[in-house]
Image (cartoon, rainbow, N blue to C red; front, side, top):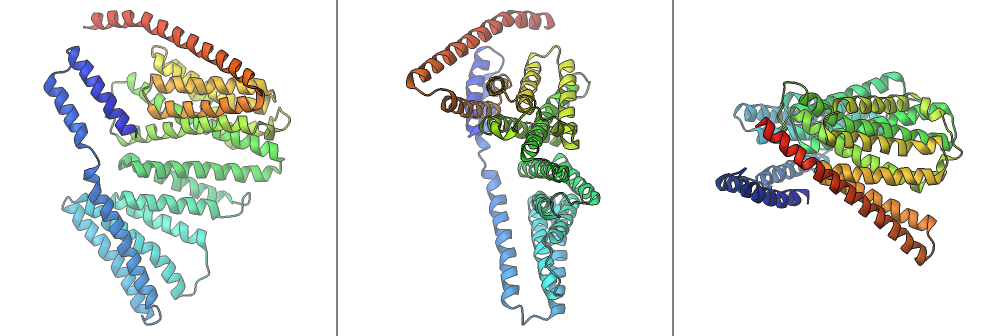
Length: 450
């Protein structure tokens, strides 16, 4: 959907650029032809190949299971080892021949065979069932294949296995420190892979593992507090709000650092793409938390609840978010768009944390609505459709909640919408005047530079 919106807007922008003389007609035609050619057809063979590899791996597992009793133990082990080594050998030959797609598929097949081999070896030697331990071994094997061969598919398998291990590795609150450190190492290894080998699915898989890992840390430390439900609820909201705010600001601070340095990386670099993905997740998480706080504000109990703000996960994420916000304002003193982003994030963080400090629902609702409007404006100024959509969705949910809670009659609803409409029209008028005043200044600055 967003690709279609981008292509439509690009066509309009290209037409405007040609009219202003910024772009030649031939250049515009080449740009539109290039975007039209990128319709996903080049990815069809890889998708079909991936499905085919999965089917072949399932067929092999079914064949072995159907003849389980008739196949000797040594033959089973030799066959498994031969399949893994043969697949990796095919992957190495394909990579040496420049066939990266075939190499990735072969590595993925070897990873799937390795996953099935763990279960088969356990049955061969009648080993006790240990799903977290098996997920950990799968994660290590898939991670090794992902890094050695640069396989994206193996990285996704490793991320899924790491998530399974994080969820079931031990009882909540009873996890030893070593397990937590191992989980951190796995997270870093999986997050670093899409930086070196960019891939959209890998970025989303790594980001999902980041959220699960942080949630497990929150759950483990919260269980040791032996606190009430309201405090645990407040800890979760504050911790994830700090994490989301940090993710949104991370990419913007990186761009500002590049702006003030002499190094200009390409936007196709894996680290920039990962930072952009983390920003999208952070914006979506912030908007979801703001709506969540409104819907379940009664779960906070009697504020102030200062103890949630003193635990390690909350102190780390909220403190990091505030420090990044201060650094962002310092770096963006000449960049209006960046100041809007940091202001919107600061307002959203305050709106998510205010129920922990004050139980006043009027104050909570006002800050949440203001933060959602600010996020919508932030997405518009940064030309990010996903951010704008998240802000609009959260604002719609918040307004519906406000109508349900505070306005009972149709007359009251009409008054509410009238006031909201007047306020928004006034805001739009003020923003329009501000942009018109800035336009001549920008034009003068461009002429001076030229």
